[in-house]
Amino acid sequence: MFELAQAVKLASVNPRAEIHGEDRVPAFDLKIEAFCPNDLLIPFHPELRTTLYKKAEDPDLVEQLDGEALTALRFPKMGAIKWDVELTGYKVEVDYGLGGDSNIMLGEVKIDGFKISPQNGGSVGLSFRIICHPESEDVGRLCEFIQRDIDIKVIPPEPTTLGELFGEQKAA
Image (cartoon, rainbow, N blue to C red; front, top):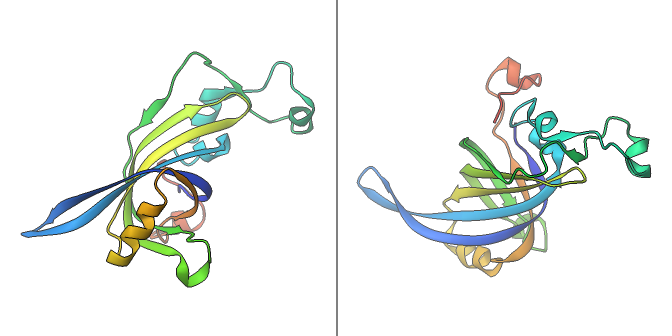
């Protein structure tokens, strides 16, 4: 399952309305941009990382220490790719700087719009959209972070099957 706990850039906050039955409910799209180690690609598909990366032909000292490091781009002229998946039931915690109760908790979010940008050296640029319904008092706090780096935790839903409980993952 997709998980993330690191500093990211909150690129934009887009307010809009969703129709739930006959009611209009405020909704917000949070555009997230991050640079992550390429092993973050494994939950998307077990072979995605090995498809995009290979061992360096002339490894530097750090890469020599980890003989299995996949740090060179297999297709250096390939640009970003879209990954068409929609993740539901996730929670997102945004660190507001004081920790604990001051953090913004977003429950039952939907995550989609993944864009994967392989980078030489073993990192990957990742952007995605979080669709959420924050509390009124959190909207302004989220808007304060537009175009700034923030610390977030993307928390997957609890496992619902024994397979999920013991690590059998569905590709994201």
